[in-house]
Figure 1 (tube, rainbow, N blue to C red):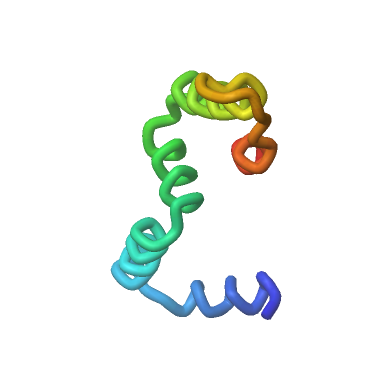
Figure 2 (cartoon, rainbow, N blue to C red; figure 1 turned 90 degrees about the horizontal axis):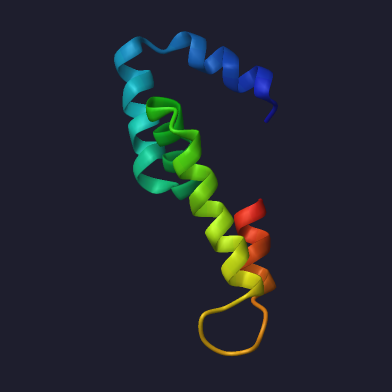
Length: 77
C-alpha cells in the first residue's frame, strides 16, 4: 500500500477517529510515542542528551570492556 492510498483513507475519517488511531499507535509503538512526545513538548535538549548517553554507553560501558554496537546503532536510528 502506498502513502497516497493511506492518505485517501485518512481523509475519509473524522477527527475523533483520527485521534483514536493516533492514540492506539502511541500506545503500541515506542518510536511513535517518542516522536509524538517530542512533537508535543518540543524539548530538543532532553532528547539529545538521552540519545547521546545511549551512544556513549555503547562505546564506553560503565561495566565490562566490550562494545555494544547494537544499542548504539539503535540509538542513532
